Length: 50
Image 1: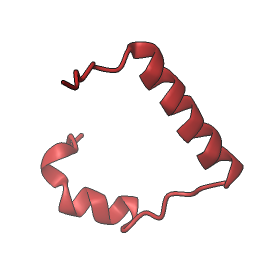
Image 2: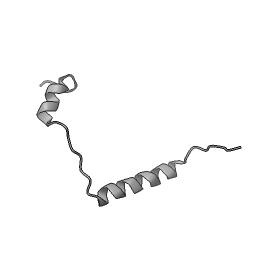
Image 3: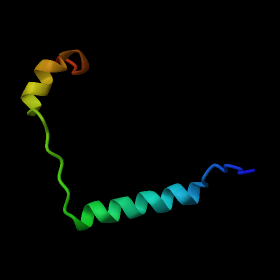
């Protein structure tokens, strides 16, 4: 019989730190699909109008 145990918070913190270190080591970047101006048009309902 195999029992499945939920990982601990320490496990998640360790995994996240490892992922973050790898991303930083690779100098990973985000490639945005559109500009801020385009986002304001497309997502106008999320941006307040002043």
